[in-house]
Length: 392
Image (tube, rainbow, N blue to C red; front, top):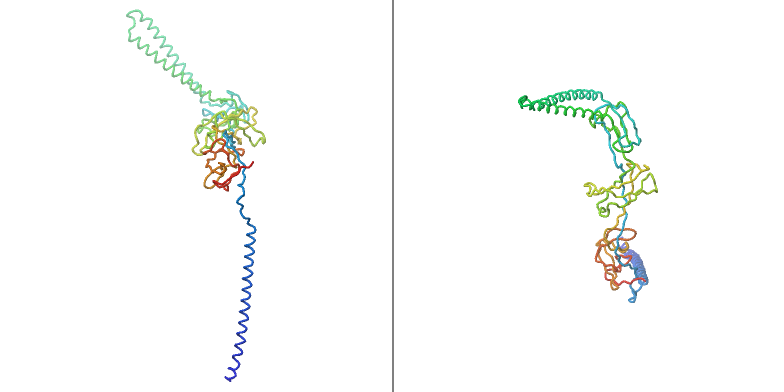
């Protein structure tokens, strides 16, 4: 049994080895083919990339650029900011004394003149006080008249020597002066009550329009906090308005008194109004860091109303002349701001500080002179010191 097994084993092993060698040769041939294919593709790509890149021409000219000359001038810009229209004059009208409203002669929207009677109040206790003050005034006036007459008689009698002692004459004069002081005090008290009675009438302090009425006839009124929380009337002058605007700190140096501005309101789209700078605060607001500027607006037709929001266009002319260049000539790089100056056919980067911009122009400050030639459309691709040609 063992002899038969040893006889058949070499044949089986030979078949296995032949099969393994065939598989190994197949894999080797496949690997070689893949390697040759990859090498062929890399070579073709390398050759095509060489064909796409043209060889540099040492005789090629420098690129040509449009240029512009540095000018000096004043650049005017426009600032658009919101403002508010307010009444030129506005006052809250209260009753000076505690009283009741007797009659009201005007209402909301009434146009009144200065000094016109707006309302009357009544306070019965004031009439009683006035009657008492008048009686006391008459009493004191009678006493003064008597003491004055007595003194005058003594004075005439004293002209005869030995008739009137000087002490009696002095006492009569003192009594006259005392009664005169009492009379003046009574007159003052009477005037005070009379003035209080006059306060029972509310009159317009200036011409304007009644914009609010907070009470009706019969209401109890008085000074703020003592009789009324709200005023009896609110009076506004509307034919003359103030246009109030807060100008940011960066632009305060460009405004001056008398500057004319244009503004619009939403109520009249497409229509522009004019105003002139009349008052400037001369100090910055601590919270907004801005200056309060006021302009007078004549509003005789009363189309504009207090409280309207206006869009204001402020023209900001430069006070001093500066270098003016196209905006495209200024390059804002992460490292610095510069312009490209053409100097003997070479590009020279000149560091500048940029000011205002308007209508495609920009203010610049730097080592420049009037007439210097700059690249009109400068970029960082124009390297410092590179050759540059001027387009004709």
